[in-house]
Length: 297
Ligand SMILES: Nc1ncnc2c1ncn2[C@@H]1O[C@H](COP(=O)(O)OP(=O)(O)OP(=O)(O)O)[C@@H](O)[C@H]1O
Ligand SMILES: [Mg+2]
Image 1 (cartoon, protein in one colour):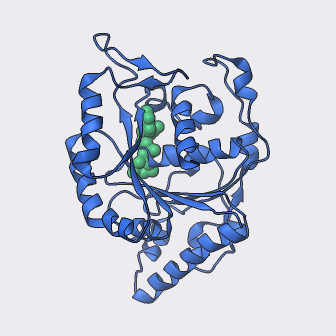
Image 2 (cartoon, rainbow, N blue to C red):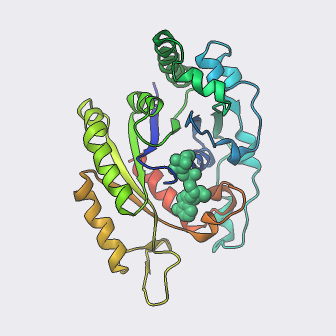
Image 3 (tube, protein in one colour):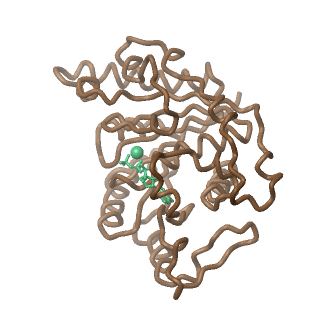
């Protein structure tokens, strides 16, 4: 039987790129012909909807509360991936943009942003609900593995040490902890690694750091940057930030598997969109290609 990988994106602070990375990674895996379930389990402030622009009939909340079946909650959004037009603006080899499979599948489960739904998940009146929700959540993961034959279950979480973030971390196979540069983020991330991640690592769940929005793409002219053979921008020459990135792994006590620059065209866009679909040759897409290579190695 196929081994499904359940990957959770988490972080100490908000705004580190969890949702961006989870959604784009899911879409890119689908373009590569894989079967992917994407879950928005940032239950306190769900936002994956903004990437897909649909209004679900049933939410993950309904499933957890036994008001909906898994097939009502998981929306088949494969068409969105297959029909998103590729923008050729920055494509160096026009053929590369067409080089994707239509065999992949994408199902997405959304969380409700309604106040009462969020409060319900917190356990509200008694602890009984909490146990029921947790049981249903574990069942959801199992169903996605068995009924959907998923290659990947990718889960977006809420930042910090919150009940539902911990629930997700507990059922994931790989934990990816994203962070932005800055002392608060680094210190908080170090703390979360010591207090929470080391427990999961002890139980055999590997966890890794992804440095996101690292300076190095939109660099001042006084800085120099380099590109590797595929044209991906590397940070080695930018002494200040590369020193920080290299020192981080030791400081936090976790291996860094990816260091993704901050791209202004992504940061300042008016509406979120799936960069990997629209711009297959964007350096951000190349970074995610590398991440996929690493995940499948
Ligand atoms: N590598 C990047 N370069 C530029 N902008 C980025 C990059 N990664 C993410 N962003 C932008 O940063 C903002 C925050 O990203 P995102 O919403 O994914 O973070 P998050 O960790 O999910 O936040 P929250 O914890 O609030 O849910 C978004 O506007 C996103 O487009
Ligand atoms: Mg988010």
